[in-house]
Image (cartoon, rainbow, N blue to C red; front, side, top):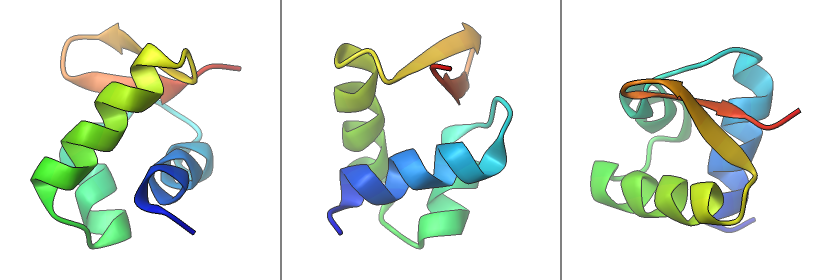
Length: 59
């Protein structure tokens, strides 16, 4: 499983809006890599930001 899939799964498991730091803790990946994956997932329309600095999976 690549990092982008791990990040997406972490969002699915959270079930609510979370901060990137929470995803870093869940995946154990480097913050820069998680930020890059979040940016890609946001561009693909798989996650969105309901409020500043929080992200949530598109349902």
